[in-house]
Image (cartoon, rainbow, N blue to C red):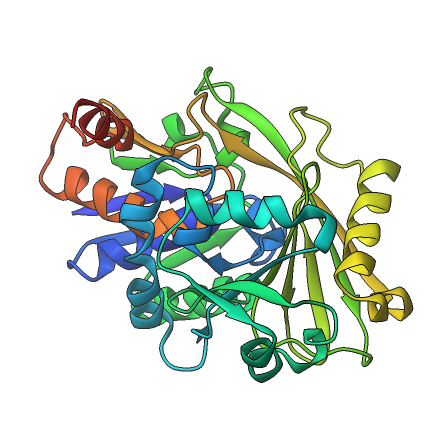
Length: 338
């Protein structure tokens, strides 16, 4: 069996890995000239944080997101997944936000200043308490994409860069459309959600794990990267202007980072990133089939968290020639009935 995958972002590469593990020949077609050049997953936070995401996501995100940590460790090998948990803070005036977050999540420990000073010493002087989600993890999405590309190529996957093709052009062979919002013409119910991120560098503060700062309007997360770099995100703007970083977003992200710790005032801005997250109305991803074309789409803000499970659903349908594919929304219906 041979399968063609259009799009080499996190969804396409995850599916390629899943298929080659089961002996399927895979060829990929990517419009960018290199890994991540035109993939919104290049600008992701890379947080494997199902318990935190459950604060405003459907239960299925937690249920299947919990399995992503082991998947990524297996696919990437040692040294790419950092399993040190997540710390969630709120300023004193927003203390009720921390309580609300705790009510809507699980698998955390309420920790005080002593534990904070052990986990993140540079934040101990700023905060008296936090929620610690010890089972969460994070990865550098850019390193992950590059590594996963190398892994699947070593396993025999051919990747054709600078090849912008329509899935229909590859028929009658089996084809999987993993182009994200670039598939909007074929997936009419898809909508764009703009995400903006900043990459900054400072030697004034060190962090060992992702940190979230709660705010009634603009929640913030800061994810440590190598060499004292920090990814700051993220906005969720319901429009399709994918290449414009707004003044408001810049002010809000920088202001929130400064609120987390004043040391970020001296940080150097290294990069501003903007792209469109593909989403359906329920913000849950889907695997759909139309004859010999399969589509993985709608990963929204859960690309690295849910791509492994979506890849497994798609691979199962392709290999076993299934027309009925389990929908994540069905899990929500089961929960509602229960």
